[in-house]
Image 1 (spheres, rainbow, N blue to C red):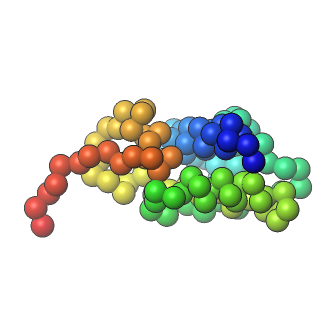
Image 2 (cartoon, rainbow, N blue to C red):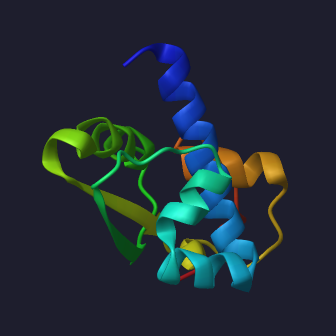
Image 3 (spheres, helix red, strand yellow):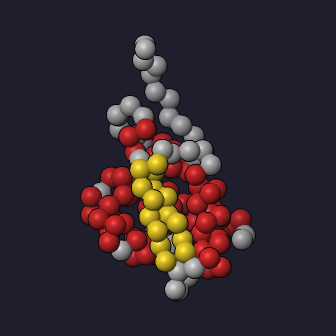
Length: 117
C-alpha cells in the first residue's frame, strides 16, 4: 500500500476511535453498523468482508500499524478485525484533539503527573 493510503487510513482510524470515545451515538453505530462508521471516516471495507470489532484493549504504540496491516489484508482474508482501544488507560483529564490523535495513532503519549504509590 502506498504511503498516502496508509496515512489516510491512520487519520480516518484515529478520528473514528476518537468519535467512539466521545460520542455515544458513534459508539452505538460501531456496535450496530461498523461499516457505516468506517465509511463516515473515509475507510472503505471491501465488499463481502466481515467486520469483527474488538473493544476495550489497552492502547499500544503499535496499534495503528497492526490495524493498517489488518485493513490491508482484509480483502484476502474476507474479514477485518477492527480494534478500538479503551479510553481509560490514563488518569482522567481532558485531552486536546491533537493529544487524542497522537494517542490513538500511537505516536505520542500525553504527559501525566506522576502519583505516589
